[in-house]
Length: 242
Ligand code: ZN
Image (cartoon, rainbow, N blue to C red; front, side):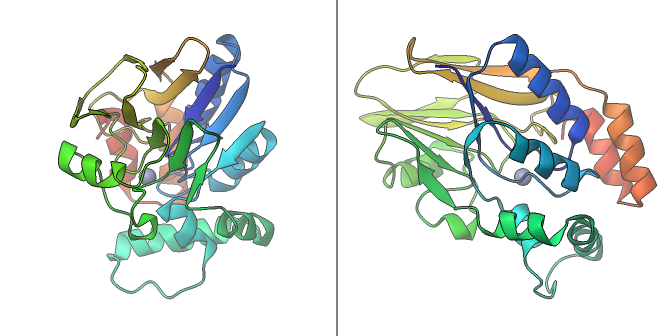
């Protein structure tokens, strides 16, 4: 069984489409999604539709999915962010917003795998895991060998065997008795300096987790952002992978 784990798609249809083509080539059996399907980029409705049409076993809610699915007044956001959220809300159908609202914040898939967008301890606070201390705090609430997460858009992996250690990774062999907390990177807005779309494949049979990177049509995505009148910075950061 080959799983593809997709995270932080962020309304970037060009990146999602390229990732799905690569998944087909790699003969993925099942998809898992750790949230933030919408926000930042210009194709929220199409990305929601595409995820719904996939054979997705679990879809988790991200903070942007939540913002897009509610009608609460946008207090405390800078004007650009508030404008982008408002824009996204208007792009989605009522059914799509209800579907986003219905997604769980975390979910245990089976005896081995848990999924969450931000952190397991208090997922609705949307905390960030960038170092082994925040990873260790999260792992106290992890009761499966593996947990896949996102939110930072930086693919880092932490493992616990006594102490917690971690860092960048390309592939990981899952060792018995270890616990792993793995950020799958971002499909639609990578922030690790590599502009290529990121996703992870997990194969429970050979106990391997692999990070994949895929080139996509960044320019096409940037043009849509500009046409939509979304902030120019959102277009520029895609090319830099920041
Ligand atoms: Zn995100």
